[in-house]
Image (cartoon, rainbow, N blue to C red; front, side, top):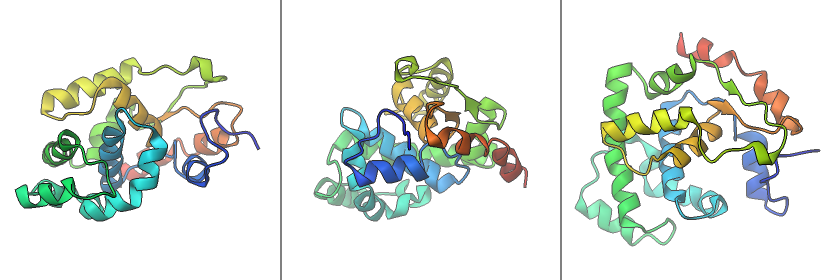
Length: 199
């Protein structure tokens, strides 16, 4: 069974993430907010570090409910800074709180964050058709466009590289290698986004 080059076959967390989540189109706002926070938390670190801490993050950040996170006070911030189960970086913690507030503003403007995000690709995942790992960029014009808008709205830790990783993870782009067994499986979900968001 062929997988994408970045999967550590000695890591059950990596295999589980790649085989069942990465690249699958996400339309659920809570999950989109979770991934946005986790991608920001990863900055400067390896993704496996965040994957292993993901359960702790969900507990610490109230299952990434943006309405709750947006209202965190200093007492909660201090609690998070003492939590050894997450990355105790004050800038990243404050960023998640600030991003939650912007996230809610986007929801109000576009009815959901999913509608805001998926309109960038006309509600159909972009198929990158990448044949080998050397073709993978660190960011794309699409990622740069989304990043610029989120930054303009007040978010942080959403640079083009972070946003590109986010877009890959939540399936806005299908960046599974064409030789990966998940490539065709994920591609078959191309029409699901429009169906879900039109309901």
